[in-house]
Image (tube, each protein chain N blue to C red):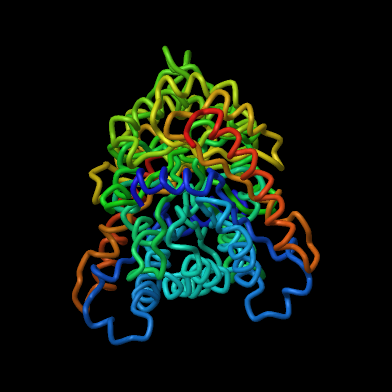
Length: 276
Length: 276
């Protein structure tokens, strides 16, 4: 998916919502367990209920991997069911040397090899250049690099002072030399909203994938105040607050309500910024 | 596996060799392709040919993931076939927030969940504390944290100066506060052998997993000169140089020859250090 297609979709849907599919058998409604693949059945209904309200989906690979072969099959079936017009992100946070990153790229970007071809992958930057560039060989695919995360551990290393910059700033500056804003996005946690001004100095045009709104306590308004650009430049992810809005038979309707509420706030922000 | 069991095994086998199972369908002998699962068939024969010469095995998850469901099944079958006395490491380089790391821990450490229960996992430190500690809840399992890698990209961030320390030193110092040398190892590339003296200042007792001997050009003698401890403290990994020593019908014998040659050099180093 090109940057322009993503921007067009944001304007058309008046939304920059990404729905995180962190699907956990212990949290989904009991009645789904009668189906042969409860995880896929859950995802299918969440997708049906939200696809006109969001511009991206983001399955979290760990949740599927924790169920072994059955979980991987759920992930493949979910990928196949995802709408073709949304930006479909695998949240895998991979990061390894070049010849190994080549294999991860095949695992997530090459349908003929693995059964899946996501549009984007999250990647961890610790091993540098050759842990990122192999993914960029795939035309039209995106790499989303961890910069400043919303977890408690983010302060351990991401805020280390590396001369003129914090480590997360050094990551953005260096990664900007590998590819442009048409191929690279950065992960920036919503709980760090005051840092967005600073991040926009180094990544003025890149889309930022922003987890942490909702369950983790980040504010959508703050994120937009400091992070929105003329092209929007934001994908705000919500996982648990949407997909587990109810654990009864009405879970898909409840997910839709929650997504709708976020989409409405996003429409206001897009108008405020003069994008729609 | 406990630290003492690992040390005992090193003394008994006179080896601190780890065999990396980076198994690639494009590189294995042609005749294996007649088997229902050529990847597993290859691994099985490599394991049979090397298990008295090495103390650890390390399948690289990416290679298996790149073949989708079939690849994951090969990995599970390989795990089941691995000797129970070797330290079986999954080279996965995962790193995510706490609730997601919990899932990765289940994927690789909990046989009832996923079909696999490795003894150790490689982990990337960028997200800090909560990306590492969930694995430590599993009694007797190890976390192997990336410190200084052998790839070209290692210079992008690992050598950033963070005040008194390079980033890789800051990682070791911080991770030492999370658990001791009985639960944490560090990855240090063999091509960085002169850095081992420095690393031993911060990690005097930790085992170091050392890739880069062989195909990547690191020297076993240099690594030992600067890195060996009274308990050995080293696991030296070789992947391609062993498993692809031949691509004919004699590949397992050729792998054994190569492993034997490394084991003999290791016996000399263990004697030099007074360990055996």
